[in-house]
Image 1 (spheres, rainbow, N blue to C red):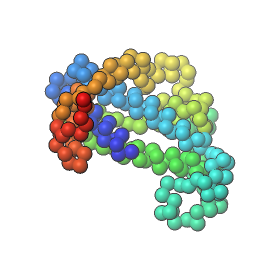
Image 2 (image 1 turned 120 degrees about the horizontal axis):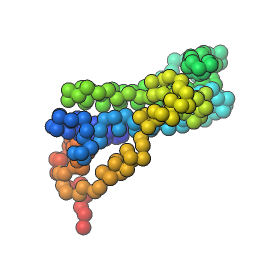
Image 3 (image 1 turned 135 degrees about the vertical axis):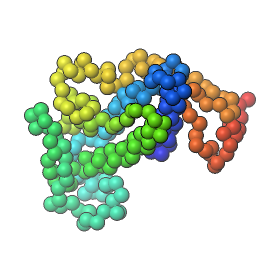
Image 4 (image 1 turned 180 degrees about the vertical axis):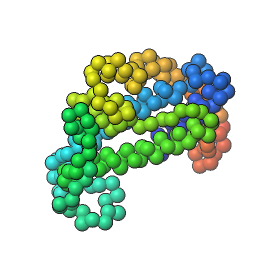
Length: 227
């Protein structure tokens, strides 16, 4: 995840630089991507990615694991017997209108365990982005959405949940989802920034230069020759 994390970190850095330079949160007028818009895209991409792990409780996952076709993250570092017979694992689910945690059989909870590892990895990246924001003296914190937010697969597929983990009504979702997810206007603005910059040493206005070039080359190194 390093490449994506470092790239987004440079966009965060540029937004903070523009905020400090122009003393405003509205960096769009200066060609930047504002932090609230980045938060919306985090909400979108995280929720989509979490669905890729499948249902929280899955007999298919158990069968594939038993057959040796599926494993846990860093399986070789696990100290158990790797058979998962009789073990349990905490899994979140819905109890009425409350999100609760239950202990489920470990073998059928493999998808959720992998999802936990993925969320932890994502959180480390978000923490580093927030460190950039903090170092620029900006009062804003990026967060991962609750794992039940905008899910299309699993226990929360038919439930409306806010990014902070509240089960909400359809009416509240309809009223606020544009605050939580990228809108057509957001997508159009970000798309409008996607213009080529080919001059050596120059960067698009919405991203900061990398901390160092590939193989520690200078910022204006001619990586690609255009003819």
